[in-house]
Length: 243
Length: 292
Image (cartoon, rainbow over all chains, first blue to last red; front, side):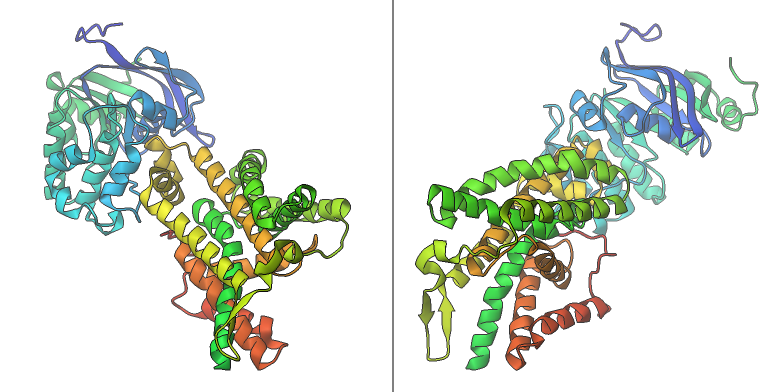
């Protein structure tokens, strides 16, 4: 399997995916493919279905229709904890650390069921030097930026092939956001799907941008080829919808 | 000197309550399930030990070694068969399920073993009657010390297990955020089943110790459940060390109350329980922390 655009192997293929919150459809027939090593930014207004799509890919949200293929295997019915073993890791919105466990414990607990790989507690502490002096502090006692770094480190501990980042800058001070994005730059070669409210950040870090509106893809293209205005219009639904 | 003796007897009595409370505390800490059948499961453990001890003609302590693995498996099965489905139905369903389970267990035990009152004390031999006489008024029974040692080993061991092992960290992570736990590869259902298995096995041990210390019958469970519940609340929910301390405080309150007037024994325990519930600093059931 190869992706027509880049020639790299397709790592994740989502086909006609539907997911609901109760009776409310949140993701409506989304199809997308992510190549190995690609960075995809998901943008869209609140309620566009970005978080639900990420959680469905991670297995944390039930799928009502469609299929998710990862590294060639159908994982649509696989529970979230099994997908971690295959190499899908989600950094959830709001960080969701284990509040009464220390930074190191948060990392260790994630290292048990992932894939074998280069990420260890020491490697994470090297990648996020700000965590080293705080490593025995309870997660609940950390600042937002420190928590976010821990949450990303926790996901890395599973040695993922695909890293899903949900709103990593939400609720953080601008300097903390800078630090988090700087550390993301270290993850060269990693396949990433990131949800970002901040268009500028999303466009800067991603190879490709997918814009969601009311659960559907309304715009898709290489980040370099899209202007801010085009994305903004799609974001607010100002352009005629793509078929 | 008599008060020293009263307090020491209270500590030893409290060790039994701490043993009972251990599994209750663990299940509440990990799954937020209050297992209303906990006392009855302990009584099942006592009967199993009694059956093994009388049929095989061995000491109850040897019988316990055989019963504990059986109860581990039974606990795992109990979770998969009943509690897992109940948990999916919301926080109140496990209460109803375990309440129903308690009634079923009591009636089955009455049917199988008759309502006769039994004790394992005689079968346990000299350990139940022997004691160290320190002074004229002060004597410490061997079995009391054995119970206290068991409670410290069990609760302390479990607390250390939760803090320092991979499986223990998984249990704490799942207790704190089951949704985030599955996102780091933890199978929450397996963790819950393991916690139930451990809780049921410790309940069986507690039941056997009660049966050696005093008497048991098919309907002994609910009283022990109340004491265990009080121990958990007094010690602060979600903390196993707290549960050990809570059980001992409850035991002391009962013996001190009982020394003032034999009628005040249970009252003393209940008053301490109420005082803890009413105190503004108490970590009551509403507190969602779980620091073992």
